[in-house]
Length: 253
Image (cartoon, rainbow, N blue to C red; front, side):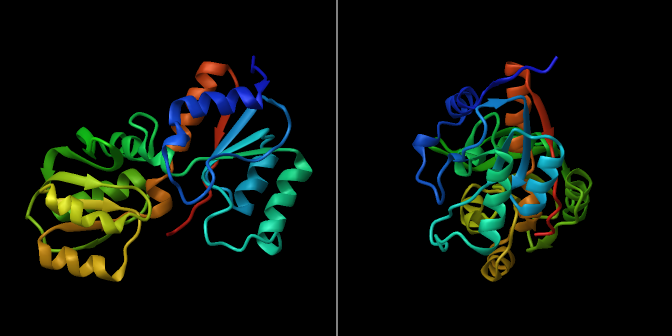
């Protein structure tokens, strides 16, 4: 039987795990939109888009937990247009929105980087820096050609990555950071990685990969960040007895 627990108990439990107070982030982490007090069904997703909100409400959500929420630094603070419609949907339904950005990237067990390593079967996965879990490094169980590694990514992430660069003939040592983290390619180079994997790509990334001898794979911002929220949702369900559903709203970026 599905349990019902308080919203505050869920927030407290997640923040014990993710420790958002340690981060200087681009958005507020935690409860972004307050809804009903009692929660029986948590729905997780990557981004709190209108399509995700609509699907979550149709599924009977009491609380939405996402990686990309609202109120980003530099955005227009006025409530109108798209922002109004999204907030109106949540407030009218009295549904909570909980969002964690960098804390969900970095967490050593539940984070996007750790979870992506598990999805891809990367072994000996660990952060490059002891004080930050944003860039990770590990090894493939067996060396793959650049084309084979692209195929492996496509199979596991359900999208074909963009591959640039002229690195080693065989890829064994891989560095990665989920999302829009192409700028960390220099850290991957310094660590001696054969390949660097992230979500997005920018114009300078191509030249760095070509001129510095490393393979770069842009595997999708959304595609690389599906997994942290699922891990948090599953742990909440396991420890608190509530229902958890992950809803994937596809995004080609």
